[in-house]
Structure formats: structure tokens, C-alpha cells
Image 1 (cartoon, rainbow, N blue to C red):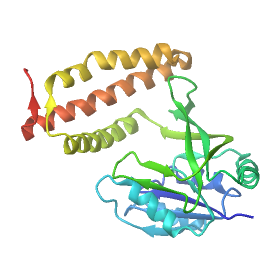
Image 2 (tube, rainbow, N blue to C red; image 1 turned 135 degrees about the vertical axis):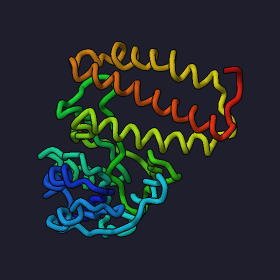
Image 3 (cartoon, helix red, strand yellow; image 1 turned 60 degrees about the vertical axis):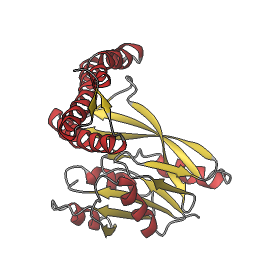
Length: 262
């Protein structure tokens, strides 16, 4: 039977990592946690589950590197990449093992992830997605240097019918905190890759584009069907894009990269 290793990047995840680790019992044969020098006891919790701890400071916003380091230190034939705030369902062990055994041509598998907002699973507004999270070691790696990592797979990709719950935001304050982190990273990367930024694009991204995005998420993708949770999710998703572009405008102004008429 193929050995399956879970790889989890962690940093100060003490409030949520246990649910993730509990859900992996019986799913994987090994857990590898890549710790970015956290200080809240997350590592101690991971050790209670027999996890292998790899300590590596995050370089800038390069999550690709953290994940690849975890893969290098895993001893399994297959890798399951997950997050500290994801919880696997009870039927995961049987379905994952079956997929690996009965689909010899596939080197990677997609799973279905349901985002949960304030503990409430969202069904609409584009909040659910299929993600490649299980792959054969040596057949996939993360590329680039980005806060939103990219997985490159060398071979056919299959699907596994399991629903993983992603408890990404348990409070509005947590959303705002993550929004601040990601917008800071994304604006830095954008300005690193662009010598000039047209003020007209910034205005468009702050006005008409958010309106179109809200229409897409709340109306076309039926975010309204998730009630108040759906409305809040759509509003915050729009605000997050505006914060990112406001930071691009702020930094571009300071760096003399703005073009066009104000």
C-alpha cells in the first residue's frame, strides 16, 4: 500500500490546527509541519500527533518554498498538501486510498473544498472550488515566488469525491487581518513586476470593477442564497480588492510609478 504524507505550513495556528490534525488521523501515514518560526505553541500541538517538524523562516511571501521544503522532508509515496484550517470528512481515508489504488494513470488528484465563513458553509458566490491537493511525490512541485502558490503537475490529474471544509475566517477581524497581509504582499509583488501604473486603471479598479465583482458574486453566482453570510462574504471580497489597489496607488505614488492624469 502506498504511503501518504500530509504537508502543512504553519505559523501561530494554535487556535485551529487541532481540528485539522484530528481529521487527518487515519487518512495519512505521516504529517510534516513546516513551521515559520511561530511562538504560540502550534509546534507542541503538532508533536502530540507525531508530526515531523521542519523549521524554516518564510522568505518574503514565498509560500511555494515552504511547501516544497515540506515535500522534500516527507517520506511518503504520495503527498497531501493541506492548510491548518482545513478539515477532512470521515469518508476521506477510504476514498483517497481507493483513488490512489484504482487510478494508476493519475499522478495527482483534485478535491472539492467548501469555504466556511464565521463557521457557516457557503454554497454560492464562487466560494467552493476544486483544488489539486494530492499528488505523487516527484510528479508535482510548487513554482514561482508568490503568496498564492502555483502547483505544476507532470502527468494526468483525477478527481476524488470528498468535501473538505475550509474554516478560513471565524470572525470579521480575522478577515481584515488576512486582507491586510495579502494586500500588502500582492501590492508589493505587483509593483515589483510593473514599472508604471496608470492612474486610470487604479480608478477603474476602485469604482466600476468592484461593482461588477459584487454583481458577479452576489447576483450571477447567487451569493444572496447564503443569506446574510453570503452578503457579508461578497461585500468583504469586494473590499479586499479595493484595499489591494489602494495600496498599489499609495506605493506607486511614493515610488514615482504613477502615469496618466489625476
